[in-house]
Image 1 (spheres, helix red, strand yellow):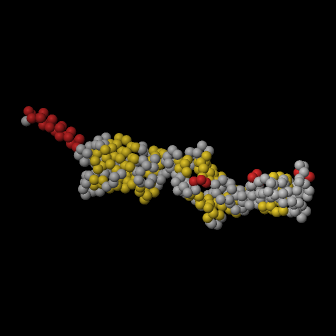
Image 2 (spheres, one colour):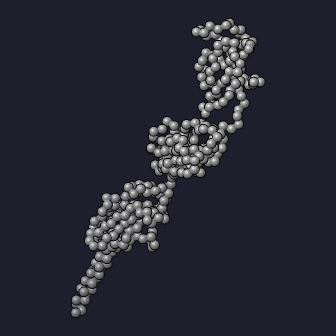
Image 3 (cartoon, rainbow, N blue to C red):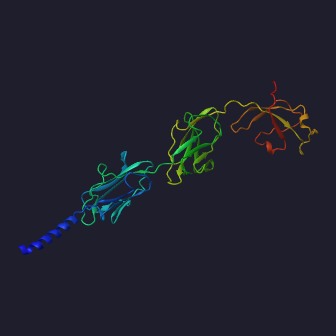
Length: 349
């Protein structure tokens, strides 16, 4: 019997070593992104590397799953895949030798959100002998990451609750990073009470939108506001996007987030015009002295009201001694008649 002892000892060691190898469960070598990572892209592909080659759950009767969900909203599951019998039922997950890949490009991740990854025990097995992986849960082993931030809104112009805003004042949003205009996103201008005043679309109304200030400012032109009333603005999520990450800006929503009051302020002093006429080729005119100040009497025109485009309306208060033109300020430089502006004393009428 003693002569067989060395042989039996070697045999036991051999089978004992084989038994240990047969029972080796996969262990994690690395996470990508790492646990508690931040600024993770929305189209991230998760990678989990093991110390040995792996396969999916081979049990034909027990279903295992891998899922990804919002940490603070567990019911919001963005990725949920089942596997059994060695098969997995999604093209967004696969194994390459010793690494598990989970593609979240189609999972509609949200910016600035923490996500958790759960892998049930036995969902992954050793390729050598089907020994199951212990799994990742949210109690003992945690795999979490936070997605990239949106462009941060630094300021609005006019500021919220501003008063005395002019009718054609440009709307400006300033961000903390370089941005591009979004695609087919809307900015809505409402009158107080909720009546829609104007909709500006980033695609259809691109001519009204400019990017400036080292690409940090978006400037929006609009129809002239009516005076002495309130307005508020809603802005779609993604109205602008980050140049570096492609992530869209947050929405501005509600009557108190960006509101202001339009007013033309105190009425300006009346402006009186004294037309100085000269003869036109097509209109015979009485001879005039080269000293235009000697014309008498001179008609006096008073600015009576203002329009939203700042072009005044004039009324003739004293009859002119000859035919004259009275151009508005918008066209004054294009007519042969020259008009001077002076702050004359208004007539006593």
